[in-house]
Image (cartoon, rainbow, N blue to C red; front, side, top):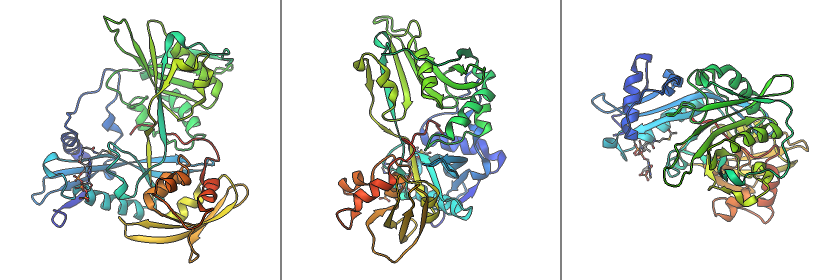
Length: 411
Ligand SMILES: CC(=O)SCCNC(=O)CCNC(=O)[C@H](O)C(C)(C)COP(=O)(O)OP(=O)(O)OC[C@H]1O[C@@H](n2cnc3c(N)ncnc32)[C@H](O)[C@@H]1OP(=O)(O)O
């Protein structure tokens, strides 16, 4: 298959062909957006959308990429391709179509100078072989609304207003943009996403309510996006699901959470996508009124230019570490010396020195945003330490200098 397969970018007028192939791979159909919502495919970038064609020229697979900016630990932002719309027709699976698409796409990213790429994985078993590792996680918090009193009132100056999502794009985009610059692991949301609708997923099959928080001067500084499900006729239970609570400030965040918890005719409130260990649970008077769901992998990271990627983020301490990184998919192995100063600024270059740790590039991706400690992967048998203090030294450097990484953006 690989020898005869052609991979090429689409043209603007091939969007429908691309989408039909993708939808068939997922076993779904193109459904028109709900009233007042945009079509999610409006955000696709045609010149980054790849089609794999069989020997007869018929499309059998798709892969696309969006252009985002990723916020790194320490606050620097870097451009990243965000891999999306990956699918292979059920009739052509397990013959290497995805492998060929990934090879083509990663080469394209390298040619354009990307230091890393990111994705959200439909299944966790697919992408490690291509060098991606799970780097940021999210947690679901389910709260019994009637037991949700806070231990202390939220003292956020300002007010909350309920808005139509269709009229709020610019305000939400502004709030989101301020937030994502402060949140490691967050992605920019280009304008075309907002014109397609906000929330998570950004274009939902069900409409979302939006509440906007304004500070005492009237400047928007937070929002929440949510929907309320039907009432169960037997149990009389009803669930409010919050897709996104976005705010730079913890008190504003808590005011928006309080609004959601106080909604009438709701028995359960679900916060679908919070960072792990979010402090909001600790505001509850009754700690057991909330249950945390399993931690889910969110953003996956793949390093393409290791020295540039490692030097771009900040670290938690000064130090020196040599990593031997194996990248079987791109058929490279290299040793890299990472040197950081007391402020956590880094240099990274190839070296001949002996390695402290040996690891696969997908595991380096998993460590990159600080979401998982190197010692955890050593204990899991994924990373090989070469001496007793190697894991501890790596932990001291890599772990979260500026908070838990999190990516709320669905793509
Ligand atoms: C970022 C995103 O867009 S995520 C969305 C991904 N898409 C989907 O989930 C849609 C439904 N699934 C599909 O379309 C296809 O099954 C794909 C795209 C996941 C895989 O495409 P294929 O062309 O079958 O993959 P390919 O043949 O290149 O497989 C390469 C290797 O990965 C393995 N693999 C691929 N997909 C899976 C899977 N879902 N589960 C387990 N192993 C898998 C193959 O067995 C193969 O292993 P091998 O090298 O040891 O033989």
